[in-house]
Amino acid sequence: MRLAWILMPLWLIGCGGGPAMFSPSGDPLADMFEAVTFGEVIDRQRPKSLAKWQGALTIRLDGDAAPQFRATIAGHAASLANASGLSIGLAGAGEPANVVIAFGNIDELEGLIAPYLSDPGFMVPMMLSSGCVFLYSQDGTHRIYEAKIFVRTGRSATGTSACLLSDMTQILGLANDADYISPSVFNGHDILTVLTTTDELLIRTLYHPTISPGMTRRRAMRRARPLLLQADGLPVRP
Image 1 (tube, rainbow, N blue to C red):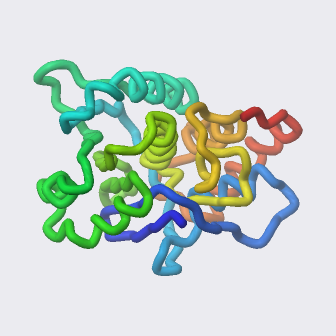
Image 2 (cartoon, rainbow, N blue to C red):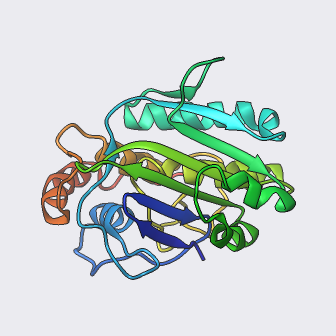
């Protein structure tokens, strides 16, 4: 099960799966978009406003295991940049970063998380069970401006790649899981190392210029529904 908290202004998520579905509307893609952007978090609260990035994402890697996943992360970043239209890439030497992906083994977890949270202990059980957790920060206008992803090492390369892709996708503002979407990075039971067509459509919809940070669910869905109706009927590829 994917674990989720909202700690304003932070979202905190684990890597696993859980339901996030509203009452079906008859428009499957629109229902999926609503679920992953406005679905319930673990405290049964739903976000009142849509959150998204408005600028480039620059990624810094931390931890001894980071170099072996550098190419994987660069590939995921390129796929997400293509789907969202955002600039997403690895930071150069000395370049400031607004996304940190940090790797550590089980013994290192609390120390790995400590620089970013005042009470890191509560996250350790999440990482032990799920492998990856993330959080992101948004300002008062619901623009996301920084994110952290914490990755437990010692897992398979495929499992780590899948967890990275899921969390890198969700820090874009599609923060919730929906296990009825399959195959998808939003399904906690699917182990995917590439985005599906459905995943790409959901990302493109969030980053369509008519969808703005701070929109209420009702207003965002009024904009998203016709965009997704145009795409309905396209095949879903694994």
